[in-house]
Image (cartoon, rainbow, N blue to C red; front, side):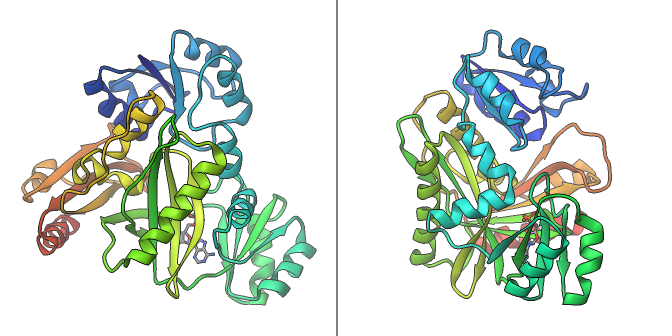
Length: 361
Ligand code: AMP
């Protein structure tokens, strides 16, 4: 069976690496000549919205998936006209637009930060009147890793925020002084069976994920069940197949949904070593129509992203239990170049190993 992946970055690379032991083959569509996934998959070079490239990419594939949520909907539909495409293309609509996403959460009984649509300067004023400050102004589309958003601390900041983001469709959200950020990853197969990974605790710096810990500490069964119910509602509503990540804020004992990613997710990289079946293998199993693997954990895992620079590999590997994953990408400030995971049966030991690795980053 040959699986096509739209996007040739590190997520595609890790999907292919997980799928080869199952006898699966991979092809990626990626416009750039150098694709991280190109080392381990056939690389069709072409634009995501180029009909000829899409057709050449689709030729001979059995199923298509994607590794980023900004796949043009028309391209997903073109592929879906000849092949199964998982996750289903309507999931892209929800994930591509922050207003549609938050509205979707609300419509399915999943709490979010309070939010208002903003289309013009007067609209911003009206939204600030309703939500107050502090608030976060975000572009509805194409924001990632904290880009395309500004915090409005006081009403007097509104002009500067409008100056920066105005002229595009926007959303204003109430600022949530959350206790911490978490995520829940779930996987649904073609028969509708759902498995979930435990809640993950995530740390960000300048809007970029730097560290994930699984399982998140200090999670009671009620919180865990709430997170699972969010995953179940979203995946059922979308007739979903594959891995879905939902990013959450924990605030005053509640879980607010911030966004969802219809794909494997950086906060699940630890699962390569830390779960019986990784998110990558489970995504591949799901889209290939195979039974899902158990998500049981193997101890405590901590994943650290390698951002902008990669410390000497021998120094990272000298830390007991370190598992290094490099993405074959040229260094650039702010770019995710790899990650390293430490796992231990004993939580204290995992934390101590992660501290030693942190010192190298
Ligand atoms: P996003 O692009 O929506 O994932 O936002 C990037 C980061 O900004 C999140 O991981 C949070 O740390 C922070 N953030 C986003 N929205 C809010 C909000 N409404 N209140 C507080 N912090 C937020």
